[in-house]
Length: 119
Image (tube, rainbow, N blue to C red; front, side, top):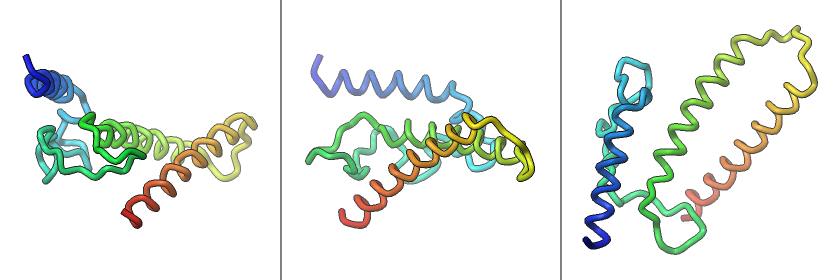
């Protein structure tokens, strides 16, 4: 078995897992696409951008995993936004954790924006 055969087996297994995942399987959710609904969404497509530090692009599909995490983050953030009112008194740790999460997301945004604009 060579490297490409092993990669094909891993991709097929990942695809079967992703198809069982609610994010990829439920097409009736707004904003959720089937795994192959948009150009470049195929797991066999290696044309994605290298936004990492190295000179060679990995084949691990970190973008897909990160997009999935961001989708769940968006859904939970929207729910929290709807739950909290301006006049609510919240524990300091709640505001601290939300502020830290916002700072971390801003750092990722700034990094990717720079890499994309200067790529």
